[in-house]
Image (cartoon, rainbow, N blue to C red; front, side, top):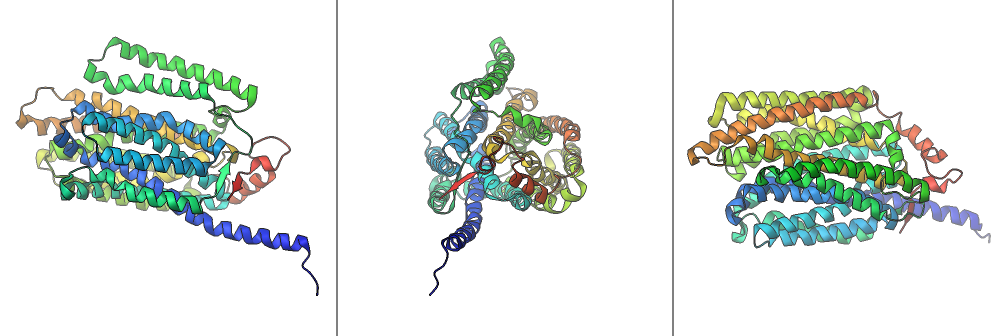
Length: 520
């Protein structure tokens, strides 16, 4: 009887473990995508419930702005830190902490006794999302080989579209149904069962991954990022409410000095111990640097549009939450369809032109919307909004999924957490800037003393004024996209070979340094 050679048995065991891991990673993908979906839904679901929240709690327009902007501020301020903590302590661990905290914060939002508690709970929710969300792309980037990432990012784009369509509709239904007399509160409480299930399944199916080198948290970098963002965004968000005081402008100008100090410190930190919070070397990757600029500007456009659109339909036109939610379905379906097609079929053939076409389509949709809002006035119908919303949705879908792939395509795996944190940070920073600009472009054109009969026309005028701003921002995005590579990344197979050859970064001469550390 011949025994199996130890080496052969070991190889068979290794192959079996690899096969098992291959099956598990798709379960892990479903779990992290569900978490991303939950975060996306939570943002859009709040927008549709704003009038109900305002009516039930007596919240002022400033507090309403903080319910949305407070989340974005905490999210933006913590994302880079969340990504780096995942690199250091394990992306699975931080993902599970994040989803547990997000679920708890959702419960606090749902049981908020007053607007102040709701704002504070939303800030906590944003902070927990900052721990959870960066791990999503990090886990995908570290777990899936290069040749499969296009398909995965295509799925991610479809999830973005599905989140966009589900959020407003689900929020409208939950608000309209007034379950158990809770009015708007179920929009937050619905996160509880989803979060608990995600936490339990995540512990079982997600494999742990870390940066291969021993990294330490850059505390000074964290402080500088948070201080810089707050100095920029807090006075912008509250400026109109406070009468645009001088200290606000000085604070925003001072944030530039803080960010300059951050860059200088991070360079010194990288030279000293190789463990900075922000990997400045990433900005030498052309696709990453250009994509980051587009992400930030795109966030500004979305931050303005979605908030003013909701207030226009529900407060300006006097529509119910359900009517407003269903009106947005053509937009969201179009986003989902275009996002699913763009990465797999269009970008490999047409490259950057796909993203630029998306920006032009969004601008075209906005101009049609402005024309219709002006022509039909207060008598505009939901079906008349369908055309501009479909055109805008197709344009957004052509941008969201390919842009993520373009930004991360050439990023070394060991920096995937930091890169993911940066991507989400700049988009959320742009989103918070957009929400802050709502004070200028929307409320700035509405008098503080309006007769009830003048509220609708004033909101309609402010909406059209805001859309001109959004169209201008999209024009800037179109120009920024010329800095993106003309063609799609060289190809999944080439990237995979580069990964295996150790050409994607990390300490020289060590193959292990170029692969994520996977356990469990």
